[in-house]
Image (cartoon, rainbow over all chains, first blue to last red; front, side, top):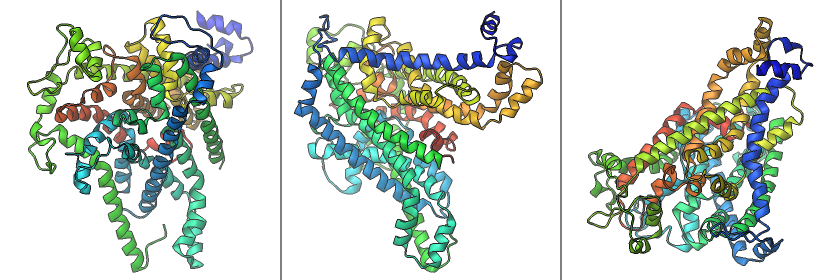
Length: 301
Length: 319
């Protein structure tokens, strides 16, 4: 039935007499997905854009009142919000730098004739496949000051990881480094294995030292893929919620996603939180654009 | 690398091997520790020095599935006021917190949460992979106006921080009564995974030669028949890999589940951490719940090891 209707609507296709035309198949395959994503991604964003100009509170029945740009002005002038952004930036820098150092370092080590290389690589994949919330939970167990394994192994006595305001953010970053260094390692390994062997042979003939070889051959050739790893991890670290929320509730670890969550679902400042969500959104889009630019660059290689 | 020649290089290689093995052990240690804790008798879970040698027990798992404390009576207002927030969350969901003689909060409701996780993750995976496969085929085989822009739009939906989308979704769901329902989470996870499924499946579809379908068309198949009988079987491994990816993502998701559910449809990721109060939680039982929750992901990771890199970098790198 539907087939007949669609083919008559589309006389252009030569295959009209043999079932659906190519164009209607294409539309049938693509349009539902696009519509679905618009309804569940774009529409909510527009909906919250509207609320971001109001003083709406979802906890009361009071109707939303239009306040213009007041929410945005208040947020951009709020030093606490800026400190949330500063905490987020610090977290991103520490955890991404750590992941790059550990991940790239392990990749350099693995890029040799290592026995069980495949098995080791597979085992190292495990942390990043786990749930961040649950990882946060069991690192809480490991970090426990009085009986946690970490303090015992490192001989730190009763060292406070998570209840110490100065340490908590680093503790979260360490967990994040544990989870995601393998990701940087994997991308680095792919990059390292793509470096042409003859370059190293030429360097060896020229009696180039290991440092010269590393900085002049290895690093420049791996840099594009490493850059992808960095941008990808930066984007993810900027969005961090689960790990920080589960591990610690210090003011010093209140990254922007947690602030946003509290503002929306604990203080019920719905309008205000929609405005903050938009500020965050614009930042994410900026990082995303850089990411996509590099992605295309590397794909073209 | 070039062949190892000098004795110095041999020594260096040995150092590298030892270092790699050591790092691997360090990386696996936290996972080993939570697994070990899940099989410990209660009194050995929090000893100092940590207990390494012990007789494994299954009692934590037994407790996990038997110690249930469904609400028989509503908490009194005084009880509610006196309770800390994490216990209130459970009370709001209709379960009363039961404390043992030593004041410990006891676990409850894990089997339900595990089932919820299964229902939500499996259904959303089927939907996302199904729609994603069709859409990927559409993009791979037909001319689409503004294909690059559309694909970027699809990808961009995944880049938003969950909390940003969650605020309007919460309000919309509240308006239509989808909060705390399986379907509410299923729709969200499908939307979340769909972009990923389209991108990954497009990579697989592009690799299937067009000649296969053309041959089928010559044999008198319609496009649809060619798709179902020729292309889909060829894409089976890709579909399986994509499905596992989507399943793991939905299985692990926390922020939406935390915001959109509280009891009926709550999944395991918000539930398991909520069981750790300030008192003395039974870590063996929590570890048992965690271990069971991690098990499917560990198995899938092993089965999927060759597809992981490609999936995680959206096809930027081909291995």
